[in-house]
Image: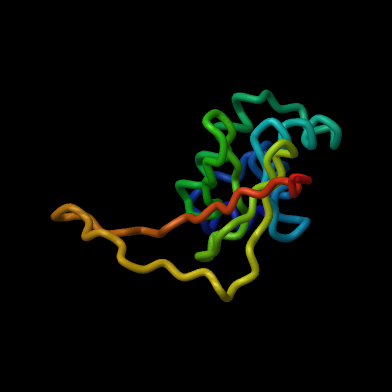
Length: 132
C-alpha cells in the first residue's frame, strides 16, 4: 500500500498506509468516514475521526477515491473510481454499484463557458415494496 500512496503523490505516513490497507484490501467498497474510523479502531489503528476525514479527502484529491453524497449529511467514499452508478437503500444507509449496462444519460445541458462535465453520478434510491 506504501507504493500506491506514494504513486498518488502523498507522503506514506503510518496512518495513511493503515487507512489505505483497510480501504483497498477488500475490493470495491463504499464507506463513510465514521465506518472507516470504526474499522481502524477495531484493527488497533490509533487514529482520530478528523484524521480519517483528512486522509479520505487527500485520497480523493489524489484520485484514489470518489465521493458520493447520498443523504444531506451522509457522504460515502467509493474505492471504485471508474464511471459507474449506484443503488441506495433508504433506511438502511446501504449503497452498492449498479452493474454496468442499461443506464444511459442523454440531453445533458451544455456546461458554462470554460467548464467541462467531469462525470455524472446517478443514485437510484430503493425501498421495500409497499403492500397495497
